Length: 206
Picture: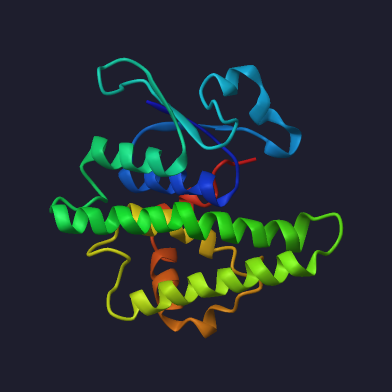
């Protein structure tokens, strides 16, 4: 059994989608970041950076409970645990990992900054809105150009797609019209039809 500590954010949804795709037994525990529950000592013991998501796998690598934080690391852990959603060939494996890192280092942080300055900042900051909005659109173009020549971010549906989808799902939050990025839209629509994705996007149930 895997205990998933999460909230309804793109990073949280990555892991619930992955668990649903793998059909692994898990129990979701809501960590309300709006109420500061991520700073509770019990959660910090699992996730030292006080960020969701985090997991505790009762059957860890050595057969004992194993805790993990950082969404990208959790996806890799689950992929290796199950033998799925990470290509077996070295070249394609690294291709999937590089697009996962693209999400972790680019898509997540930049889209997140747009979300903050458009939705949460106490007052408008035009410079920040322009800076992060421009970078967000640039990243969409990188995705669109790449997806023009292939169905998925790597050779097959993988952790890279699972990680990126929940961020693109908030395209309206960062004022991006997917019609302007047709290859991203095709990819996004295809992933959205997967039953596991639809279920994972609804976790945690509140």
